[in-house]
Image (cartoon, rainbow, N blue to C red; front, side):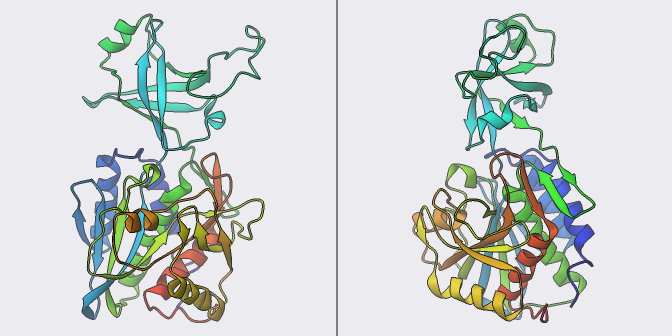
Amino acid sequence: MEIKETYRQFYFDTVTRLLNTPSPSGYYEKVMKVVEEIARIEECGFEQTNKGCAILTIAGKNHEKALGACAHCDTLGAMVRSITPEGDLNFTKVGGPILSTLDGEYCSILTRDGKNYTGTFLSKSPAAHVYSDSDSRARDEENMYVRLDEVVHSADDVKALGISNGDYICIDPKTTVTPSGFLKSRFIDDKASVACLLTVAHILRMEKIVPEQDLVFLITMYEEVGHGASYTPQNLVSMLGVDMGCIGTDLACTEYDVSICAKDSSGPYDYPLTTKLIQLAKEYNLSYAVDIYPYYGSDVGAMWRAGNDIPGALIGTGVHASHGMERTHYDGIYNTIALILLYIGVDIGKQ
């Protein structure tokens, strides 16, 4: 079965649509409508949990138990913390964005009554011609703010627009797909993986493949704040976490590989399941790496901390510059899709 080029455009169309739909942790309504629309076209069952997560189901030949996989659609972002007397916005982080990379980035402020305003993250010493510390002032929550693109001169002017403390601030992802196959964007972590699962569903439908077991794909909305997969369907024999693979010092993964994580900050992943994934990657000649991520946590860890007795493993395409201006390549995405298909029992043929 040829999957590398046949489904490339579907993948990039899907991931671009997801990336351009704002969804900082907990803000799920818009992006879940996109996920639901795609899932129903691909003939997946769709259920939304009370927390705004999605459960996608694909019927297999055996209905007694299901194979699980999860990825998260929530992203990093910010919230309005307070409004200054001058009409600027102080903010608090949602998740862990690298704040120095936000200096000068465009954003949108979403009010609770449905209004949308634009702005820019800036240092509180934003001008080189005015401030001697413009290039050295700390880039953190106390030394940065959001400049609003509205004619405002006071906090009351801002409040009159309907902007309040607790409104979400969504960062412009700046999504780009290059002719050479690179995906450049914020929030590749982890919308790239959600698109991988949706592409797997698309492949199964187009190739008329019925998996041996029922499949459950859990799309979570709170991974970046630590409790995304704390609720998990209980009929699962295993859970494959699909999240980004890390690139950098002391790591083997590249943007062209599927990363198989043996251990992260929560501890080791299930040994037999991880070993099986490594063996499948070897047998089918996938480009892969096995790595340990010391500053990383995943939905599988959240699943275990909530008390779920389900073995779990973690894979994902290699992503450069995580939580900043991220980048990956279609080769890494392809290898990730291929390993997901092998995990669910689809023989993709030797690559």
